[in-house]
Every structure is written in structure tokens, then in C-alpha cells.
Length: 413
Image (cartoon, rainbow, N blue to C red):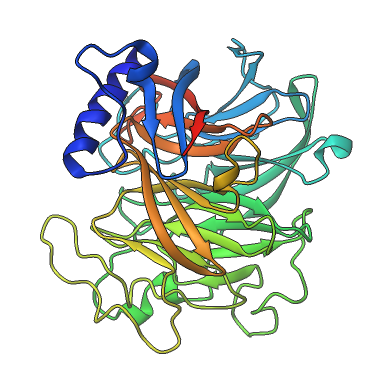
């Protein structure tokens, strides 16, 4: 029922904005009320499971189980459409600040974040987690660990990476990043947020522009945590060898194109200026020196401009921001006219956006869903459907339960 009410609100809003809308008659049938029409495919949004708390990431095992991370520090199993009551055992120590209450200090993003299977999971059963690890300063830092997933539990858990990405010295030191992806050669990429260091003063001295720390970077590792010898800064004195790219703010989506092998991410701008970026060996993506956003509340300028020599421009920008989150490239059969397209979820905008590429250029953006809920993650299921994890609210840790829904095809345009 909650899903249908949200879709009816979406229909009214999208009709007013001229977006793709639900088909609503004076007295709509259940099927008509749930139908969403878009440029290439019509679909319905169908509830899959409820009762999850701040879900952050999903993945599917070869056996058909859905694994879902809950930010308070639990890895849950959905089997045959049922959320199992017990969380997976054997996880590392996880810092989940603000548990059980509304957090107003910006630390609500701490906790368990991504879950990703090894490319050869079917034979080695290795599962990777990113999470905020407790630290000496009580605020912790992002870490990546892997373990063997068998019998609904993790064993042999080992830490592969612990970020050198200090907070800004205040209670508002969130923006952890934490998305993981493997490319076709088996290299592992991880996003690291800038930890909300102030974007003021000499912007070229901001931690996201400093290669001696991991703030505002993506890193590239072998699957066992070793640093590849061809990483761009391996031979540079003082630079951290794990770094692949830098000058990011807070990347919340990470995906590898299934045909080209290109690695893409999306990242939060400040007030305005969410970005999609194509990651290239050793490049600087500009935060906070260049960008499209402004300071919160005051609206005052941050950047000297949107472009600068030696800084890579984004492939796509949202102004105002949509609060970008999970992303993927679609490769399934359920929606054949979407193959190769990029999908990006939104938190603040509560929307699902489809981006069409021509090579490495974004040529079209279509909003498929709006005002349905905060889309924290999206994954393609074994059935070719698109699965969306809905987050109950960024200010809550261990807050109101939400669920996972999926897009099921209802026709081809």
C-alpha cells in the first residue's frame, strides 16, 4: 500500500513537471495506478521485501539470495522473498554512530556500507565489505575487509585496506564514500569521501587536493589488498600508492561499463553540482577548486569557476543536486532497449535517472521515478529486473524500517 500511495503522488507531480507519468484515470484500476510510462519501456514498481533498517547496498549470490547491508552494522539475507531474522555472523568491528536516535551531527553515514562479491565468488566464496572502522579519534575511518561466505556466516575475515582519511576535527566529519567495484581485469576500486573538510581559504591546499592522504580519492588495489605496480602515484615521493584519482567530494555510486570496461562514479556536490565522472589514470577531478555548487544555507560561491587546466570536467552535472547514490550499467534482457544505459539513484531528489551514453559522452537524461522514496542503492537482479533499496532517512541511524522494490517490465514503447 505504501508503494501505491507513493506512485500516485509521483504521477501527479510528474504530470505537473512534464515528466514520464503514471497512467491515472478518474477511477484507476490497480494495474493502471502502478503503470509508469517512459521513453522505451513501461514498468511497474513491485515491493520485494520490507523491514530493513537504513539499507545501503545489495548484491545477489549465485544461489539467488539477496544480501543487504544495513548501516547500523548488519548484513541481512533475503531468501525466497523473505528477510531472514538473523543477521550474518562474523563481521568485523563496525562503528555505527548515533544508533537508536536521530543524529544531528552529520555522523549518520557511519556504519556498514558496501557489499560486493569477488568476480569468482562461485568458486572462492569471497565477499568484500566496506565499513567505518573504530579509530583512536572516536570518529574512525573507512576500511575494506573480505571473508569467506559459507553457511550464512563469514569466516576468515581479513582487513585489506584502512584509509588514511582523517576527519575535519569537528563532529561533522562524515562523507565516507565506501563504494567498491571490480573491473574486468580483477582490480578493485574503492571510493573515499573528503570527510567534510571546509571548502574555504586556499582551495588548492584542501585534503582532496593532497596526495599524502586518502580524502576525496578513489583507490585501486589487487583483490587481496596489494597495490598494483602501475598505479599512477606509486613512484611519487610522499604520495599514497593506492590512489587512482583525486579531487572528489563524496562518491556514492561506482560502476564498470560491461562492454568498454570504463570505470565511472557519481559524487555529491555541495548545494548543487552533483557529478558523473569517468575515472582515468591519475587525474584530478577538481574538488573543491572547481565545481558547480555553492555553500549551504548562504548560497555564497565556493569555486573560482567550473573548469581549470589540469582538472577533469564532469561528464554530467545536476544543478540543483539530486543527492546521487547507487549506480549501475544495465545489461539484462528484461528491458532490452535500456542495455548499456547508466542508472543513477537519488536521495534528496528521490528519483531514478537513466543516462544514455554515446561512447563516453552523456547524450540524454530521463527521470524514470520521482518522489517515491530515497533510493540508496540499485542493482540488476538475476532476473534482469532493477532492484532499488529505499533508505528511510539520512538523519536516522537504526531508524524507521524501509524496504526493497523492483522494476518489472509492463511493455515496450
